[in-house]
Amino acid sequence: MGKDMIIKILQDQLEASNATILRLNITIQNMQSSFDATAADLKTTIANLEALLQERDASLTKAKNQMRGLSKLTEKKSERQKPQPPAPKTEEERQSEQERKAAERKARGNNGARRNMHFEMETVFHDAYPAGLFESPHKAMRKAVKEDRHLCCDETHHKILVKADDNGGKGSRKGYIRAIVAAHTGLACFFYDDGSHSEDVILNELKGYEGTIQSDGLKAYKKVAAQSNGKMLRLSCLQQCKRDFVDMKGNPDADEILSLTNQPYVNEHLHRRMHSANSSRTAGQN
Image 1 (cartoon, one colour):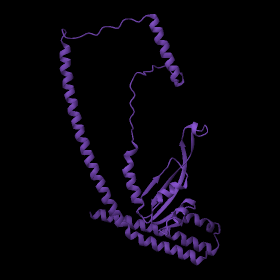
Image 2 (cartoon, one colour):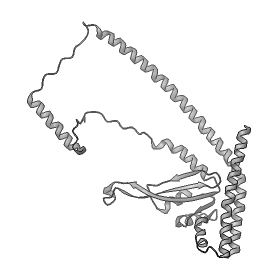
Image 3 (cartoon, rainbow, N blue to C red):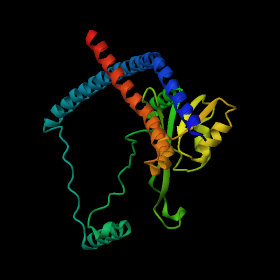
Image 4 (cartoon, rainbow, N blue to C red):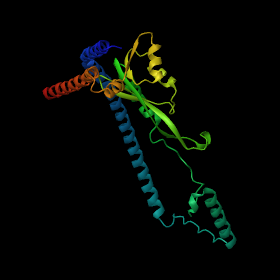
């Protein structure tokens, strides 16, 4: 690819970036309307919870009054029922109980700690953070992110815990999590499928998207763009494109291309500062 072609591509990208910034305010207004509707639903939910708490308080007050009435009745000696003291245990019963507790401790393990095991007690499980609690906000964020006409995509790996029996005796394995960032609004969402590195995760997430995606050279991003029938344009990561030209630093052509490549980042910084200043002035006027 010649120098003139690279310069033209960079200039076209710069013009597209300047044009899309004009749609930023409209996108923000749409998002504000969506958030306002969500806030209204949350207020209704809070009001319902407050009503339930008031009902609970009333029930507790009634129960306390009943307990005070019962306490007054039991204070009368003629009506008080004294519990019968338990019969003393025989030496054989004490020995049997000690052996039972020792067997329970041994079965439980716990590094030999000596403590009583109350297996007769009921066990109740509660989800502190139910998976569905954040489902609606996550769906709204994913929708808002993919409304942007320019997405930046990337992924990273991390260790995830697994059952050792299902993983060759190892309790962890490498898992992948992916991120999509809206270039103009700055919103981001993450998607994850049990740590899978399959290209189907990316193909399913970006299926039907129309616009520009910017990513590294991962094959899945090239494939999803190729399957979009021209509705999706894939751009390579400029930082990765710069690497070969950085290696040729000192060559006049390479230095010129590096300067042009850095210009969109300079313009982006200026756009962000201008938008931040405009937002501050608007807030001050309100």
